[in-house]
Length: 247
Ligand code: BTN
Image 1 (cartoon, rainbow, N blue to C red):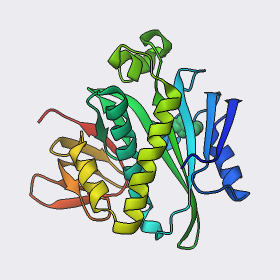
Image 2: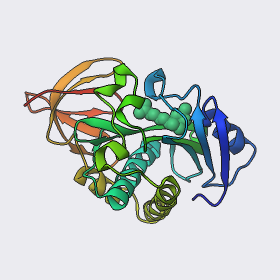
Image 3: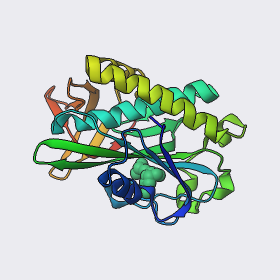
């Protein structure tokens, strides 16, 4: 991971550039980085605020030989790798909000956007976009983000060394990834649950088809979130927007 790095000053988004590189045969572990994104993409079609120099805006190409339904596990693995890296580099207490937001306290510090290229049920490659607010100060965030976003610098009071962060992230990701490919999802599941902001909380979930309320109780072996409703029935949630309410 990270043996091959493609670095840009300014791009619209590193995601389509990573897709392009992957389609042209870029090796697994290729990293596409940019100092500034003018059209950073978040999940669910949202924009991702990516100003110059204050963040880590990167897309990672991986080519795991796993069946299509298991690809969400790669997002969970990425969240675990980012969380561990933040903890090791800064000592900050970091939590993962399902499926893939990294929180410090009640504010988001990092988001992950996984995009898949597959043919029938064969995975060609994944592009995993990681957007980390590294060195932003409060005034860097637009008003609509100020209450919900933070940065490692704001939280730790010290500037983050971005290169050393990325190097450590690559090492940790690689270690998790190798273990996952050899031994399966169990360890990621355990580490994800250990870091979870979501497990044990009452949640309201808005999926495409339904609204659901209940307590998040864990992940299943596939990486799907299990939510127990008031009647004690377990629901499996593949993808949704999650809101939290006081218990
Ligand atoms: C989210 O939480 O909504 C996911 C945000 C992902 C942002 C990263 S920044 C690098 C890569 N390029 C993009 O345009 N988006 C991802």
